[in-house]
Length: 144
Image (cartoon, rainbow, N blue to C red; front, side, top):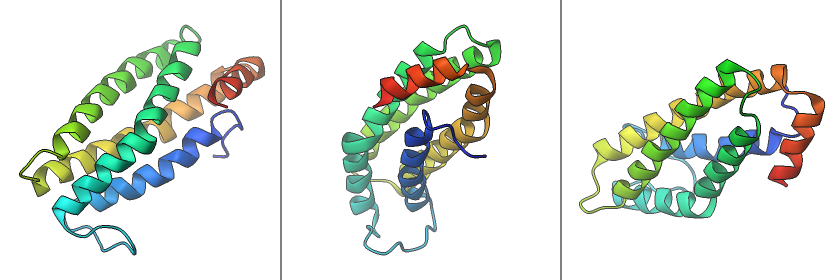
């Protein structure tokens, strides 16, 4: 489904995070120019979180606040997504703790992927379905 211009930047951000999620999983294929061992993967995950993902979460939470009350399914998803952001923040934080464990990285990768898929497959289509053009433009201004 083509994304409305207002939420397209969030959707584009998800691509980078999906690559990270795959990289963190057990038996991940080698990605060109990306880390291969657990310690380096954890450091890369920390960097991506600090430089991109944390801001992305904040933008999503601002957007979710902006669409509160539009539709009960969106409100229900907003609660789930904000909770998942808290869980993911903790997982990113603990992924950098020594010793770095492949199981922790795998868990983080799976949770991050599931979270992104929920937003892409459920939340964003609902936003496009139930938000007015005016509301979508408010979101656009908020994110830019």
